[in-house]
Image (tube, rainbow, N blue to C red; front, side):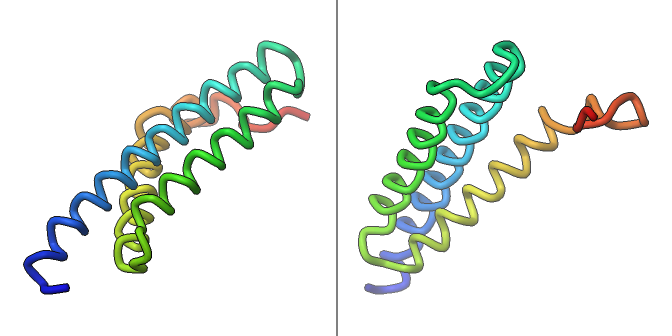
Length: 104
């Protein structure tokens, strides 16, 4: 594989990893809200966990297509998307001592 041919596939792998990361975080956020509303875990929470993990792993395997470089690019995209999602939606309500993420 030449360098010119690998750059577009790396960019596509990075974007695909970011899409998988956004899916993972949005599904996780919805799952946490459902757990909070239901007051605990239910069977659908466990099923949602396995769905989320299975979808991301299958997506990474499809993007990888036997090339570890594509997997690395997809994982970078996944991590970047996760970090951006956490910064945008996550810990802001726990900042400045207004509350704790864990209740005793």
